[in-house]
Image (cartoon, rainbow, N blue to C red; front, side, top):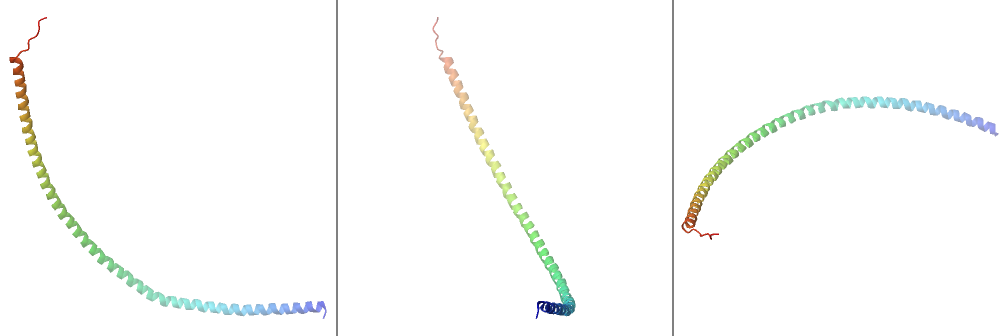
Amino acid sequence: MSNIQLSQSARLKLGQNVQNARMSNIQHSQSASLKLRQNVQNARVSNIQHSQPASLKLRQNVQNARMSNIQHSQSASLKLRQNVENARMSNIQHSQSARLKLRQNVQKARVSNIQHSLSARLKLRQNVQNARMSTYTILSHPVSMPNS
């Protein structure tokens, strides 16, 4: 066979292969399209079936969460009231203790002030007495000054 005959035969074969590929592609495309439509339909049906129980489950979960929130809120509110009451009682106890301590400190300060006052008066009397004695001594024993 010559080169030309081989080339024509190869072209014919190529054409047949292209045609076969197109037909196969069309068949596969139609089959894939049908399969895709079936999968979409199945997914829709499955989604509807799953959506209904999920929706019900969601409603139950929301309801459970609300009930749990109410219970925790009531418990927290009770705990808060207890803590406030405990704080008030503690504050009253500390306040009474602080008042007593203040009274004691005021009393101690008064006693200390009286003691210091008495001590200062005694010291003042002693200083006055000493000054008088010193003045008396100077006046009764005058120092003679030399005449110049």
